[in-house]
Image 1: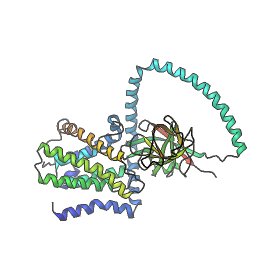
Image 2 (image 1 turned 45 degrees about the vertical axis):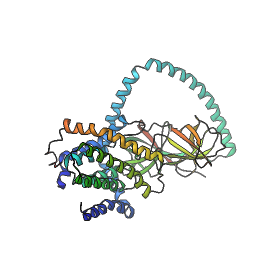
Image 3 (image 1 turned 60 degrees about the vertical axis):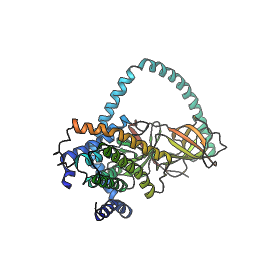
Image 4 (image 1 turned 45 degrees about the horizontal axis):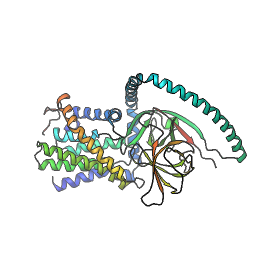
Amino acid sequence: MAPQRLAVLTIVFSLPLFVTAYFKPVPDTLRETFFSIVKPVLRAGETVRQSCTDAVTGVRRFFFIYQENNQLKREIELLEREVILLREKEKENDRLRSLLDFKTKTPARTVASQIIARETGHLGNWIVLDKGGRQRLKKDMPVVSEKGLVGKVAEVGPETARVILLTDVESRVGGMVQSSRQTGLVMGDGSPFLRMKFLDPDSDVKVGDEVLSSGLGSVYPKGIPIGTIEFVEREKNGLFLYAKIKPSVSFSRIEEVLCLEYQRVG
Amino acid sequence: MIRRVFSVKSILLVLAVFLISLYALPFIEIRGIKPDFWVLIVLFYAFRADWRTVPFFAFLIGLIKDILSPRYFGVEIFTLGMAALILSYTLGKLERQDPWVVVLSATAFSLIYETGICLGYLFVNGAYELTGILLWRALMISVYTLFCFPWVFFVLDHVADLRRRDWLGGTA
C-alpha cells in the first residue's frame, strides 16, 4: 500500500471526529433522522423479540408453576403483613414531614415509554424509546422502571429518545446505602454490575444492603432503588471502600419505562 | 471496485447483522459478553469478497455503528477503518488462503479493534474511565467473536451460499 494512500485514508477516517468536534449538530441530526426513519422497523423487531422471549419463558415456567404458586402464596401473606406495617410508617412519615417542613423532591410529570431497541454490550449500554421531543421528553430526564433506576435520557429526537443505562461506562449516579445512609458514587463499567466508590472506610456497609439514589446532583431524584451490594472491599489507595452492586433492574428484560420530569425543590 | 461494497447481497448482509445485533445477540450473551457481528462481516468481506476495498467497507460499517451509538461520533469509523487498513495491508503481503494467515489476521483485527475502541473513547471523553475490567471485557468479546468466526463463515459460505465468486464480484 502506497504511503500516499495510507495518509489519505487516515485523513478520511479522522474526518468524522473533526466534524463532531466542530459541528456537533451534524451527527446529532444524522442519528435522530436515522432513528425516526427506522422506528417502525425497530418497533416490529421488538414485538417479535418480545413474543419469542415470552414463548421461551412460558414453556420454561410451565414446569415450575405449582411450586411457584405455593411460594407466591407465602409471599403474599408476608407482603400483606408488611403493607400494614408500611401504612403505619407512611402515616408516621407524613406527620414527621409536616413537623419538619421537609422539602419534597418529586417528579412533576412522567412519560411512559416503550423500549423499541436495545444494545447492552461492553461499551454500548443504551436503549431506544418510542417517545421523543414531541412527547416532551428532554435530555437528562431520569428513567425508571417498576424495579428501580434505569438511567437517563441521553439524546432526544422528534419521535424517539435514547437512554444511557446505569451500566454504561459514562454513567454516574449519587448513591446512598439504605441501612447506613452512607453516600458514594455509583458508576457503570460496561459489565452487568455497578461499582460504588468513595464509601467511608469506617462505615458499616455490608453485603446485601440496598443502594438507593442519593438525590445529590441535579439529574436523579432521591430514594430510587439502584441495586444490592454484592461485595465490599477497600480500594487500592486505602482511603475509601468500594462496593460491587447488582442492579435492581434487569436491563435486558425491561419493556416499559417511565421518564420523570424531575424538578428539584429547595 | 467500490461498487462491490454496495451490491445487494452486501446490503442484505449488513441489514441482517443490524437486526441480529439488536434482537438476537441477547440470547447468546455470556455475562454480558456478546460476539461482535459487525467485526465478523468486515472479516467476511475481507476474506471472501475483496481485501483491497475492505477499508472502505469498514468505513461504512463504522458509520452505521457510530449512528447506532450514542457516543462521540467518529470513533467507530476511525478505529474500524484503521484496523481494516492494517488488515488490508497484511492481506496484500501474505498468502490469503493459508488457514494460519486467516486465523491470525482475524485475531489481530478483532483485538486491535476492540482495544482500540476503548482507547478511542478514552481519548475523546474525559468522563470515560479505562479500567482493567473494561479491557478484560474487550478481550473476552474478541475471543467470543473469534469463536463465532468459523461458524458464521460456515453459515454464510454454505447455507446462505455467499461463497460464489460472483456474489460481490469477488477476487479473494
